[in-house]
Image 1 (cartoon, rainbow, N blue to C red):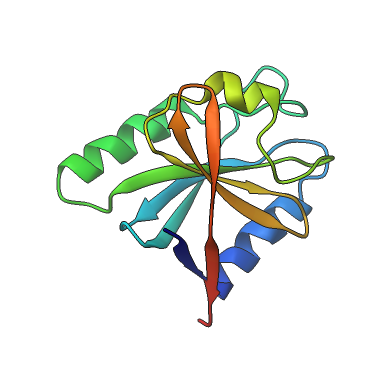
Image 2 (cartoon, rainbow, N blue to C red):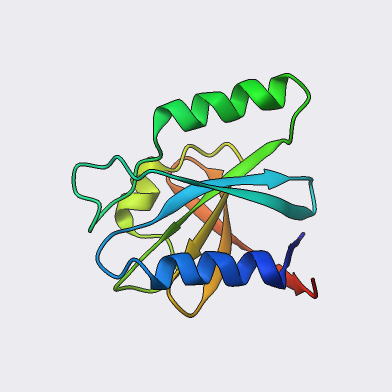
Length: 132
């Protein structure tokens, strides 16, 4: 099963990644079982943001509270690999919980979507860019 994303939203994320060549950007993905509808940029609070990402826990907890209160559903997160490929790294695999969450990994020019299908492992997910 694939996910849709608007061309405008994807362009915004690619620009965010391009504008941060020395540190990973990160944020949250909200939507449905087939569509990434909204993204929320978050502060990368990792000790070494040039090599890793950690979403600000305050933003993450707030997103879960909003979802429980009827707000947009949190379906995953995004982050960039400034000097790499948009594929999960060993560090990403160490963080993968196997909960089915989406991981949208970006470079300045490309985005690929992944799902954590089991602890420490990912499966590629189709990403359909829709005109916006």
